[in-house]
Image (tube, rainbow over all chains, first blue to last red):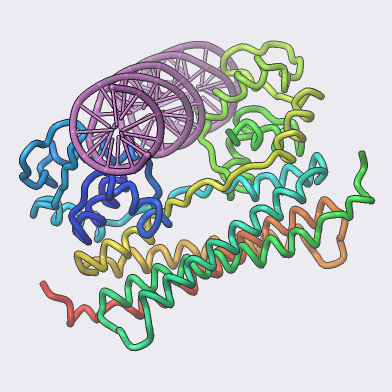
Length: 182
Length: 182
DNA sequence: CTGCCCATGTAACCTGTTACATGATTAC
DNA sequence: GTAATCATGTAACAGGTTACATGGGCAG
């Protein structure tokens, strides 16, 4: 039950249309809560029906016309309630760790290529985060809002850093191709 | 599409009944790929229908009777194929980071209690992992299989360590209760 | 023989994914 | 005017969650 709250947060940061939101869910918010445009439109409909958001009045909100939404007081209250509510951490699911565990049983043949690819993807993501950090969080800005946003970004940076280091170790653990059983 | 492969891995490590698997998915494999008993029974049925596993022959495999499964050669081959296949990382979804981002907009009132609870949960998980490490991976055992399994466990340890450190920082960033607007 | 737990399973629902559909705008 | 793209949406499906059902064995 987090997608509606991700959308409320995004809309509070800036009122947007469905497509705007879709774009913002490809970066920024989407770095830790991804969503496709189909999910977003579905959820915008629900949020509007519940009275949490409303479409900004425009001329012709017909098909093919942009429709921007803003958060209503009830929506802000709901987000506040959700933020403060106790929530149990969701069980983890990490396909890569599962694969390594499977490889311990059936062998590591063929793994290396994809591990290197993942390593590369994490390096790119880290570079992107560091770019954002340099651009959006120059030293000195210490408003409460900026500090919290920076904290979230640093979580991303440190998680990517962890995966890069871990994948590097993992690649060292793999037997040389020459040693692999066929 | 990872649950069937998680089950194949678990069954290769040790043939089991549905309930055994359920228990093992509450720890061990379940630390990075959780599943409920309903999912497991559903998936066991599918895997058996596909010829990847089979029920070990017993007297009366009726309702209420334990039914143990073992992996067939086709199942091992499928797991091997999956392990070596390229897989894109799934998009992240982390409710806690989302909440912090929401809190940057609607305020941090009420957050602290639950952050402390999460911190405590992560500390317990880390302690559990370290216990397992001490028990199952004493220094000196360096079979390829043990090294891979240890690598996976270390990922868990380091991730928990990260969250503990991050949550500690986050709690320091929160304004004092006295400063919070009502 | 009642209540409780073990073991397997069914059903309904919710969320997320993939593929496709439709109207409007812009480029050529 | 036709093709490509923008913007919003529908439909079908897959995976995961929650609630409930069924039969067997065991403790008192």
